[in-house]
Amino acid sequence: MNILSRRRFAALALAAPLLAACSNGVGSGGAAIIDARVDSSLSFLYSTYPGTRDLANRAAGVLVMPVVTELGLGLGGSYGTGALRVGNTSVDYYSAAAASAGLQIGAQQYSHVLFFMTQDALSQFRSSAGWVAGADIDYAVIDQGEVLRADTTTSLSPVIAVVFAQSGLRMGATVEGTKYTRIIP
Image (cartoon, rainbow, N blue to C red; front, side, top):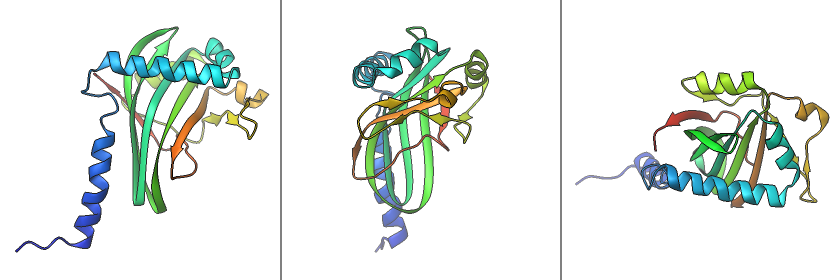
């Protein structure tokens, strides 16, 4: 008789939804599905927060992660796929993954966009084997009135992150500690 320990049960309970979250575009139609999701996310972002269109116009490149799924129960993780756009063309595809530990419970999905405001920041991102978002990212904040606020300091930052379209039973979403890896959809 094989008895399932609490640790194994917890590991399996966390693994199942995380594996299900991995279907955010990879292996399910590839680039065409990711591009359609990116187009839809950008359309929503620009219509809901018009200030982001100006950021995009000034950016050397834009990484769009249309759906990131995040789960946590003590241990947590997130995963999503997206596309890097230079101009209006997808030039590369990426996965975003993060892990966390601590007092946490819940699940959520959200979208995020990284605006690479300098050619140097974009080049460093594209040439890395796996780029990890750190404290050097500034966030353009969406305030209570649903207006994007990007102050002068944020506008001069090499990488600006916008997190939007959150839904679920977890509060807060950031991209710090997220590892971006180039994929072939």
